[in-house]
Image (cartoon, rainbow, N blue to C red; front, side):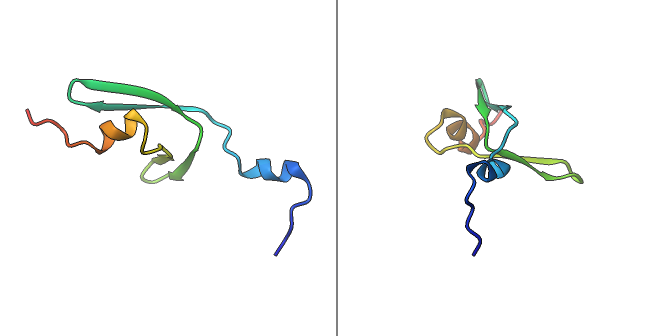
Length: 68
């Protein structure tokens, strides 16, 4: 096991890019900033973000879509 002795080594793993995530469910919309994100794939293009279950965006994302 390697021990990190210098604190700046930790920052290599800390995300830097702040993204804006938008969620739409019927008439309801919400936008939030997300710092914990990463590129997942180039083909197909996928981008992953971490959203806490307590956030309103997560509630909208996991709720069933209203039927037209």
